[in-house]
Image 1: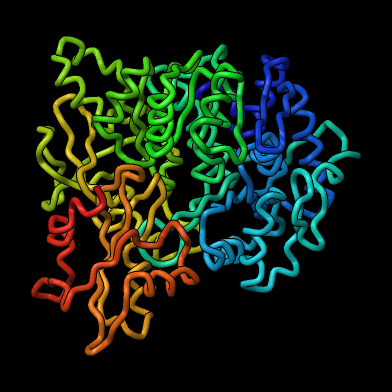
Image 2 (image 1 turned 90 degrees about the vertical axis):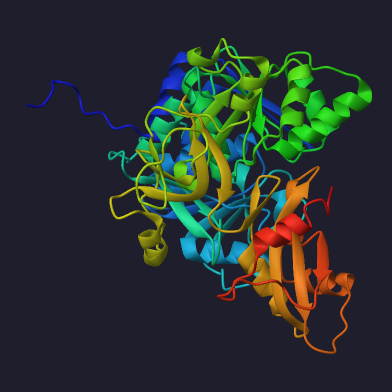
Length: 538
């Protein structure tokens, strides 16, 4: 028996329709090195319609991929809505990738157009020189600085278009957003989000015990908009009509603190590295936030010392966990904890808050041990964390091999994260199945970096490990064995790598050994190396 309920699709267009009707005068603010811009949600919606019309006129068809290469801004936010509403797919390109990787994802996605910030022209140019992009439409956003020949101007593109648009999207399962991850080995892999998954993720994120923002909040996501859809902030904030502030290319602590105060920001989110810098700046000046009261930390595990320091600043600290493959939010650890933990000691409460928390409604989860059975919830027994749900990927875009490896035989997604689960159903990530390095919230593939190092003619073997770092949480260190009778210095090897890997992939240190310790089957003993050099970067 079917219900009598209407079948109305969940599309990204319904979010902006709701926001423009219910919160038309709410403000969206964009601050950058070039100035400040402010407008209402109603004015934002009109510009989104203009952009959607312009996309259609320039030949973008349903299902086409459109790339963005941009900082956090009002124009990037317009792309978040206009591209999916036009039936196309917004591909948010990570501006921190190496040129060859940027070129790879543009080619793999088969992007038809790319919208880029003028200040990033110099970063984009080398990537465009890597392959034939003669058919890629180029649209520059912002004041012209280093113009790429043939690029159209964003404002000119939308100026004459109608501020009304009838979206052709009727099926909520159509693709809407595309993000790439290079989480482990090989080339970056694409995760293709649907309208339905994006809307459901936004609804879950806005729940009180998840992100918990309210209509009267002012929210500034420091997390980049090219990083897993800015953790869903642009959709969740619009859904509940919160005031949004975007800080463009500003990431230094002093300027961010000033923006938080000037714009009366109440909530924010970003990786631990940002909050370490902000904490240090506040300690240096003795200042305190005027309005900020809630910080969401994600991308890397939150340390006890940083959590205590943020507590001392009077901030509510929430830790979030997720992956590109999970849209990303799946679990949250709030400092309010659950009802079952209210009477525990302060020490116990701190231990719980440092865990990755409880999984949000909408996502099913399990922790599976070597036996193939779920582990006991004792907070000690290890297993692989696995998910399934409406905003969990079932595979990778245009990558059959990776898609086959992504799921278990019964349809659960492998996370590659080893974790425990306690009696309160709190997850705690304890290790990675594969040895990746996570620096400032960004993944660095140890295998890819090892391959780059071993491409040097003087290198025989190389193992890359992640070691604790006071600012970046973790940084790569290379352990290298040279060929016989060869001399090579640390700086010479780093200089050779500078043209072959992204700047932030460069190992902080290179250690030379006669031979790298190995297992009986020839695998590097990375655990032994991590233990031996644990304090090297402290």
